[in-house]
Length: 401
Ligand SMILES: Cc1ncc(COP(=O)(O)O)c(C=O)c1O
Image (cartoon, rainbow, N blue to C red; front, side, top):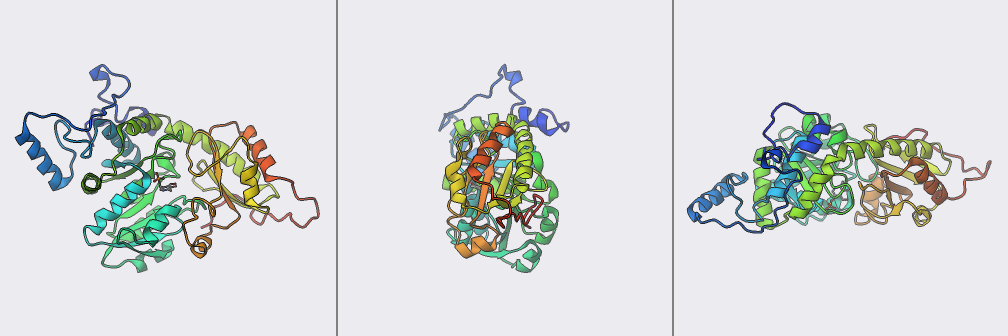
């Protein structure tokens, strides 16, 4: 745990950590809001000492003791966010990156640098994560399987098992404890972007790596692009070394905004989840939908398949924002087959349950009735009685797997 998280060691509830972790030293410094350190470099008259700190970083990747050295090695404002996120996920450390994709890239490079280039992954994943693995851009090779096939898919050079739960965009859930067991000694990476630590803490269920597109709920306001990996200190050291070598660092202003975002994370996620559950219920009862996906663990994401043209729904919203991304204070809707999962091969996408009729909605903090009236209008005419289009073949919100 970094310098900002170890003043109180007694366990604290998530809501308390959300507003205090990473800030425990502030009051003693006479500060309330965390300072933003924009320095790219740090003067030192002791170059022998600095050399020793650089050597120590090269050996273990541990955050350098004493004054920072250079922005790519670490930044005090970003470190506050890392400390706080690690506390929320219940891990020893966290390492922040310029985006979620930069975070995943760093994980793959850590394993590839150890000669472990094979990845076992479960679809669906976010479209770009799928693409990064499928295209082998980083020299990795992927075996796609379902959760039951993980053990059989492992090879001596398997460096990582990757799952998303709830998954983007179908909200399919996997039994993380069972999957972690199936991985044996191979690290399991769980993308926890959709659940957030408010609803699910994968490290407690055996995941070694917990990844977030912090662009989403952690930032929470649609104005920060960021990624983070929560993990043990040993893996964090390797991630910091890769981050230093490849440069995908998080800007300190983004680190500040993320720390601020974390303080309202539990409140935002719970409020948006209550609205999402109600919208899922109404959509499920609505004859204009074929199927509604809503996770067992809850959350603020709802996906649904429509009888009509999904593009017309996107074109019809007025209050809801038709845009990719998720996790903001306002409600967003998008068509995965056209946007977020466009880059995935059509057959692979359909096999993963991403139908062309599927819409993915990220529910925000607006009033539920206002959201429903916008959705109701965008869904268009209800089928007339006896028109043979009454089929809602799926009468309860449920995950696809
Ligand atoms: C589940 C999930 N993981 C990772 C990413 C990639 O994150 P970023 O856009 O911050 O690079 C996304 C982006 O949508 C996502 O939805």
